[in-house]
Amino acid sequence: MKYGTHTGNAVKAKSQCAIVGVYENCQLSPSAMLLDQASKGYLKKVLKRGDISGKIHQTLILHDVPDIGAVRVLLVGLGKKKAMTSAKYAGIAKTVIGKIKAISSRTNLCCLLEVDVPDRDIDWKTRRIIESFEAGLYSFTEMKGKPPEKTDAIESVDLLVNDKSELKAVTGAIAVGNALTAGINSSKRLGNLPGNVCTPTYLAEQAKRLAKDYLSITTKVIEEKEIEKLGMGAFMSVTQGSVQPGKLIVITHKGGKAKEAPHVLVGKGITFDTGGISLKPGGGMHEMIWDMCGAACVFGTMLAIAEQGLAMNVIGVIAAAENMPSGDASRPGDIVKTMSGQTVEILNTDAEGRLVLCDALTYIDKFNPKTVIDVATLTGACIVALGSHASAMYANDDGVAADLTKAGEDSLDRVWRMPLWDDYQVQINSPFADMANIGGREAGSITAACFLARFTKKYRWAHLDVAGSAFKGSGPSKGSTGRPVSLLFEYLNNLAA
Ligand code: BES
Ligand code: MN
Ligand code: ZN
Picture 1: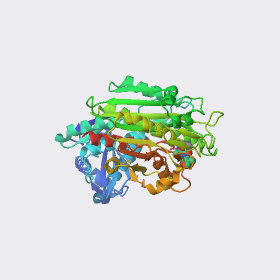
Picture 2: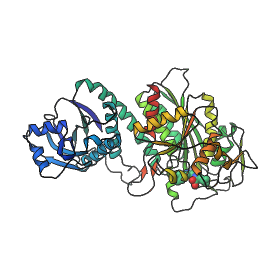
Picture 3: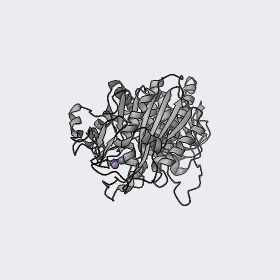
Picture 4: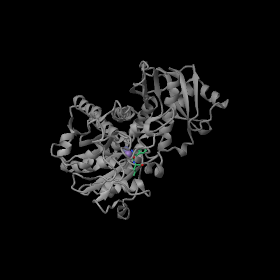
């Protein structure tokens, strides 16, 4: 979809549909007011009939409003003026795109930047409109026998800019929004591709492709032979059970000075998680195609910052493997040596995410990172704790935690900080090895984070458990959410600013 700007008058602008807001009790937004005046009170007359009062998410489409440039007017309820919030604003944009989609309105004039949102500037509003619109337009159809033809029924959305002095900000924000949504959509796509297509090899190919598409990016793929040589016994214990070779994929974005230390993102890329010998029950197992959503998020974030040309050095590392039961698979009770030298007793082969991540987290120390964020669909317990609204965040540094919390609130891709107290560490102690890979029934998301914390002492680090937020596992709208690309994009952009 093409996003543009329109300065000047909502009245004269030619479009298939002008989108304007109405507050509760039929209070017109500035552009709605102008349309009403131009049409000699047409909007107010309709409102009087009571079809729409301005309650949030209400909509009404008007045809042939006299003496204006738009063929249709989409009135959208904004709720109470004083009650507007960031989340409501993004929600209204979602409602709007649903309607526009339903009527396949080709060219559109969106007059929602004039809607006041507390503490938010026009740059923020522009990015959120694009993000909400693109989310509403996304569908995953490429695996259909006959993928539907791209009709591109909706061609364009022009954002009305009332004040010419704001044009530059909006134009810039459109470019940033386009970069962000390209990243989100690529992340969704990788997430949604099934396990037989999206293998570790496929992820590596996509990462190499990224390096072809963007000058700032170089990709290095570390193969199993090398992974073994590096001493990554935990990573190997997961990948050894699969015929699909595991890969450690290193995507480097050079946007900053040559010697500037990078920020590092690490993603769990289990392209399918059967549980291994500790086999998962069959019922929901298909949902484990999304067990590489952490990796997909790292990929999408790297694409977004490359597309944007972010002036900062960032390295994305994807730990890609398939967790399968087989004669070569690791056994419950196996003890393996990690790259860090610490040994792990694998009491449950289904706790495989932490096994691939711990070695990746040791590997990246050589980059001397400024901060490290890992992203993983790590535990079912995380879903029990937080549901889908927030990603669980763990951090060994209050500054990183604060930065991520703020980025979450600004991007509406929120995190909630969880404890990493030593008290929980005892749960993963092992009499035989340096640690066990599970910590019992209690506090499962926390003990998984405690496990990772034993490998991340040398740098400022946060872990995001996105098991609940990264995908919706069932129903007609199932699929990857693209989270937390928006969060990480915001986080990195804030650091760069
Ligand atoms: N990939 C799963 C976690 C998961 C479950 C993500 C459901 C998304 C939805 C992970 O590898 C796993 O199996 N974790 C186990 C850990 C347990 C064995 C300690 C779990 O959560 O049950
Ligand atoms: Mn598992
Ligand atoms: Zn898993």
